[in-house]
Length: 255
Image (cartoon, rainbow, N blue to C red; front, side, top):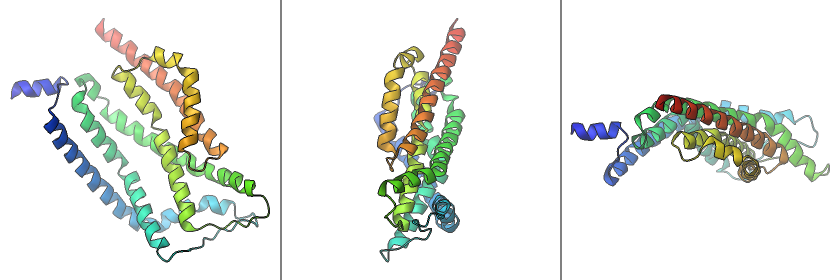
């Protein structure tokens, strides 16, 4: 038994059944965390809805844009509240979800790699909030561009469902996109890629980043595309620097 514990501590292998049991346990904890967050999201629906409609109210000075919503379905508001509560539950439970993800992959890592758990959860949570915030604050410009495409002969009035779904998807897309440096740094930590390889791949990476940003941006407008792609390019460069620091420290430790 002691030998088995030592092997796990050194980054040994788990059996398939152990992996399945571990995965079930982590998923149950994630589900409970999201459920608790969703209950809080249901109670916070009104203030969050008011906050999310601020970008639309910023455009309300335009006579062609209405700051009020219309409803085309009796069930629309109820279903929207359920959807928003679920998204809020995921957002509020994000630190727990990230911690459970790390705890699941940690047995496959070496002991010196597991110490990055707190840094992983903390930085991923901060980056998600940063991405969602940028999506929120750039939405008025994105909406202005989208409405300018239709010209001056169009009266703009949205359903709550269409508007809130757009802004939630935008914030989610930006939050997920801002996890990009975490993935790149992690791949360097476990040795799948090296900083020199990433540096040589830089020009192709920039093109791929812009393509991915265009695909995952729900509004498909150029303002949101640039607002997401530029930080990801900067994160790519920062990830290379972090990878070089980690590699240098490893070499010093091995010397």
